[in-house]
Length: 171
Ligand code: AR6
Image (cartoon, rainbow, N blue to C red):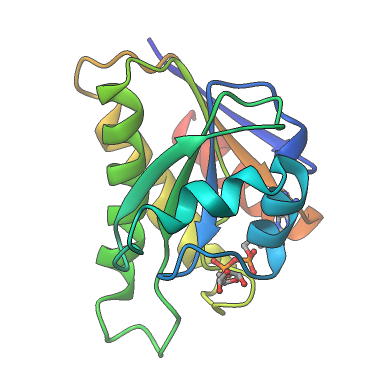
């Protein structure tokens, strides 16, 4: 059975098969976790990203990790929060599902996600965590190469939210 983990910290430090980036549709870098990943991966990353022709919201694309400890980066584009009635939950779930599909297609085993859309894009953290855990759990019901999914929470608030949801599911 694949396992779910929660850690608090910097996703760029993780030596997993793939870390997921909370990117924007240009895929050419930005602030938040995207900026941290580009800084840690090095200048090769933006060259690789230029070849990808951008990425739609709810979709994801793969590059190498370059100077990161992680082998690959899966760049997912989350929705900007616009009140919740603009398909945000489906688009956010799609980010997690598509990232896992890409990881599975490359027979990867260990993948780590940041809390996509909950920073600059303004998605409420508790609602985003519910969507993330539900989408990942649903994906892991089917046979897959993925053995371990880590939710990397940068802040204590997100960590507590994730811990509470997972604890309530295990009761
Ligand atoms: N490791 C893990 N999580 C982090 C890190 C890190 N090093 N740094 C920040 N976070 P955000 P978004 C958390 O804003 O909301 C960029 O400019 C952060 O605390 O990075 O999807 C892109 O280019 C938050 O919980 O991404 C887009 O334009 C989470 O990562 C836009 O921001 C996501 O916050 C995407 O916005």
